[in-house]
Figure (tube, rainbow, N blue to C red):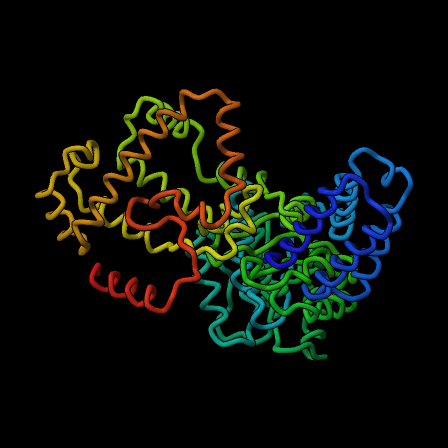
Amino acid sequence: MFDSLSEKFTLMVRNLSGRGRITPANVRQAMEEVRSALLEADVHYQVVEDFTQRVMEKATGTQVLASLEPGQQIVKIVFDELVALMGPVDSSIFFVDPPPTIIMMCGLQGSGKTTTCGKLALYLKSKGKNPLLVAADTQRPAAIDQLVTLGQQVDVPVYKQDGQADPIPICRNAVAHARQNGRDVVILDTAGRLHIDDALMQQLSDIAGTTRPHQIFLVVDAMVGQDAVNSARAFNQKLELDGIILTKFDSDTRGGAALSVKAITGKPIKFLGVGEKLQMLEEFHPDRIAQRILGMGDILTLVEKAQSQFDQTQTEKMQEKLANATFTLDDFLEQMRSMRKMGPMKQLLGMLPGLGSALKDIQLPEEELDRAEAIIQSMSRKERENPDIVDSSRRRRIARGCGLQTEDVSRLVKGFSAARDMAKKMSGLSMGSKMKMAQAMSTMNPESLSTLGHLGGTGPALRPSRLSPEQKRKMRDRRRRGR
């Protein structure tokens, strides 16, 4: 998401910041490039015109052009206008007293509505709520079974009525069931269609009229671009939406829906679906999205992801082990599993300032982490605690146990030892030295990043995707032999 747009905005920032003096002509040229970038990203044309016009008016003011750092001031103007375009947004959900709070979910078929219901239930559980999922989609085959499966995965009960084809009594009875059983939030998974039609809208209006939901969320597929904005506008005219949830935000879509939907419908984006896993639902923050677009990274979201997966006490113990070089392969495996719960590695690294564009042409093979885990699990407890004892005979035994090559085991052991030594050295550095090292890494180009070493010790951590056919063939052959 936003890769192409971010690249063009970053180029604009670099060009303006590198000038000692900026003229109105420079600003107009930069805004033309921004305008083209936004249109290519499938942003609504009226939104593009209004946005560029506002930036032009503010950026060509005498105070900006006469300042000592006009480039930086223009960047701030662009950032502020991006935030204003998508916000302001209060991503919190308002709960009623007495409960239950009724949340109605609607959307077109294929938008990921049912999966999003499961994600929202898990999110609410993390906030201390006791949600109830309601299987009110009686139109799509297997929709009820899908919701039941999701409910089991997030440990949330699902209310359903077998043999009942009318969703209205299902929703009405579900609310009464929630009151009787202490469920303080009811999530209604309503039916969708392949397109907007009168039958769909009438059914949704009837459900809303019967249950009187406190909030209505529209689930929209971010990959459909302008159609997402059009469907959001149509749903809002019939139902008076409270917010929008964009799904598939981790895809290669150009991002036009995220930048257009608030301006066109007046309804805020509340959440983003950033992956297939059920914990991959993020609150929407316009300032953080603007930072990503301008290549500034998104450290706050990265920190929040880490805080949700890493226990503070356990983290302090790990830091102490790293400082004393007593970090074991069991510790490494535990940390690796926790990191993988946060999301794909490329997505996480893309939140670091300066790395988003650098990772554009680089592949981060998740299967390498699977290989590392297989090797570690094939070791004895003594070997995991002290990898230095893994000699050639032990390597052969471990390789047979996990179905890999002895070279893979050697790389893991050597890579782990090198990483442990580096961590010990880092623990002795001052904060300033650590910041300098982090800053140097964030400015590396793809070629430099590809030499950072081995991810988990089993293969290249960052691998350029521009390989020759012969190189790709050899890599496939090596992987087959490894299996």
